[in-house]
Amino acid sequence: MTTRESYRILGVKAQAGWEEIRYRFRALAQKLHPDKNPGNPEAAAQFRRLVQAVETIREHRRRAPQGEKRWYRTPPSPQDDFFEEIFGLKPEAQAGGREAGPDFRYDLSISLVDALLGKTITLNVPHLIPCSHCDGSGGLPARPAPVCPDCQGQGRRPLGPGMLRRGTVCRTCQGRGVLPPTPCPLCQGRGQRLKLQQHRLQIPPGTTDGARLRLAGQGGEGFGGGPRGNLEIVIFVEPHEFFSRRGNDLHCRLQVSFAQAALGGKVRVPTLRGYQIIDLPRGTQNGRLFRLPGAGAPGSPLSPAGDQIVEVVVTTPAHLSPAQRDILEELARLGKEGLGMAAHE
Image: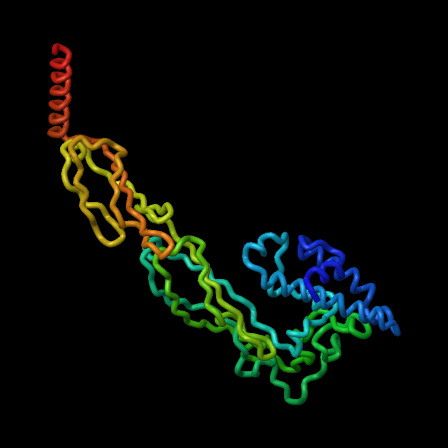
C-alpha cells in the first residue's frame, strides 16, 4: 500500500498532524470494527486496510529525513502506539510482549572549564532492576498465585467482546495477571529495587550548554525480554566568574591600575591553559580590547578554534595614601602646565 493511498483511505491530507490522523482512525475504526459488523466480510476487509494505512503512514514518517519531519505539524514518536490506547492491541511488530525499556534522563552540571577542555566523569545513576529475592514477581507465594480478579489473568482490563476485550494495563496486578499473596520483604511487593549504577562519561572538548549525550542500552529494563532503554545525559554549563563564552570565543575583563595603563608594561592574563602575557602600550585607555588567538574554545572539523578577547578595565583607587595623593597632585599640576604651554604656542 502506498503512502498516498493510505492518506486517501483515512480521508486526510498529507500535511495532517498526528492528532488529526489519530482522531480520524478512531472514528473509522469504531465504525468498521468486525465486532460492530458481525458477518460482514467487507467491513472486516476495510478495517484491515484502515490499520494497514495507519501503519504505512507511521513508518513513512518515521523514516522521513529530518527536514521533512519538521514539516509535519505533529511528528510521530517511536513510542506512540495508539492501537494499544484505543483497542488494547499492539502492532504486529510488537506482538509477543517484547517491549523496550523506558529511556532515562540525567541532568549533569559541569564547570565551563570542563566543558571547554573536556573531562571524564564517573556518574552514579539510580536504576530500577528486577528484585533478585523474588525474581521480579513482587511476592513469595507458598502456592500458585491467585488470578487477578479485575483483569481475569489477562494483565489488562476488559473493555468489551472480541478484539475490544483488552484495554489498558491493569493497575491491580500491574499487568502480571496474578496477585502476589505475600509481598516480598526486600522490594515490598514492587518486583523492582533501586540500585546505583556507575557510568564513565567522556565530556567532549567544546561541549555547549544544553548538549545531550546518549548512552545506548543504559536505560530501564525491557519488558518480556525486550531491549533496555537509553540513558540521556543533559549537560548544564555553570557560569564562570572570569570567562564568558560567545560562540567559540572567550571574553574576559582584566583590571589594571591607572599607573599600569598610563606607563604601559607587561601584564599576566589567565587563560584556559595557564597564563599569557599582554604588553600594554603606554596610555592604554579603558575598554581597549586585546585578542589572544587560539586561546578560546577548542575547534572541530566544522569550526575553527576560538580566541580569547581581553577587555582592559582601568581602575581608580577609592582610598589614597599621602604619598599617592602627592604623586597624583603633582601629575595634575604638570598636566595643567602642559595645557598652558600649549595655549601660548
